[in-house]
Image (cartoon, rainbow, N blue to C red):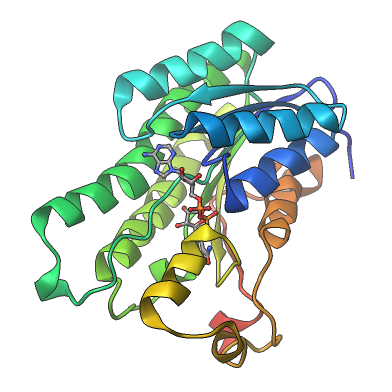
Length: 252
Ligand code: NAD
């Protein structure tokens, strides 16, 4: 696959899980990486991991649900590295597990403002920059839960359905601007977010594995590899696509 030397990649949620694995994978391909997240310590850690591997990165603290912070996140990337070729919008929260009638308005607002409004704000500012420079690629991290009903996580699932819809619509709007926009829908992936699900439900990893056709829970790198491929020229005719990466779960 092509090298990303001279290219610039921005990853939100880059301090842990899927976002961190993706930031590291971009660096291994030679891209300069902008690691974005809410928590200073964890994004600095990812930046240091990239630098120890011989790569170049900056850590930018931003809350993806706040317009001014997202605007300056993109501006900082461009000020430092001169352009923005790839963006992976992975920041997200799972929210409390509960049926619809037991979700509070604050909980609803928090999930939707980070998972859905956050992706929209990121795309809005990333697209603005990509238009100015003549193109780019965006990969949003949705979820298989956005493709089906999900008891105990209806608002999370709805937010991810929203990400899928935003991805398709934006892909159509910018297809002729040389901007490709796709989404990845992970199934279960071993990250702090899934650890929280194990913790609150008491479901064990072994029980989870039995629900997955391939018989294993996904690793963050499984998603990272897909994002890297979607950003590469090998995927240059793919836009508006929603790709499940779930060990076969959604085939059933
Ligand atoms: P994670 O909790 O390790 O990562 C989420 C990251 O987003 C964290 O680093 C967190 O600090 C950051 N974040 C949260 N709110 C933010 C905000 N407002 N602004 C900036 N950063 C913020 O979990 P993960 O599993 O790596 O999740 C990454 C993405 O993958 C999420 O969008 C999640 O919904 C999605 N996903 C995960 C799974 C899974 O099984 N782990 C499955 C499907 C989809």
